[in-house]
Length: 111
Image (spheres, rainbow, N blue to C red):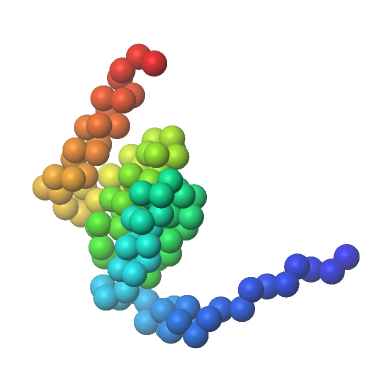
């Protein structure tokens, strides 16, 4: 039985990996992910956001967008973990506080 072919990395991907972690990387993937979320392609958006976070673990906005995506995928515990990481680094992050409050209200409301 032959192994499936392994996708070769592009020059851009190799460059990203050589430069990571960097506070200047990942924004293009975040923009794409936000568009994918708006289109309802949550699984594709999640992959882009995880790559953005891997490239630039310093940007809280990427983690916030990932939490929103996970919430839309009905993966609330994972969304809470992302928000906890954001709030641990920046306790005054209002968008993260709002999303966490929304998750709490959804969890407490009867279905």
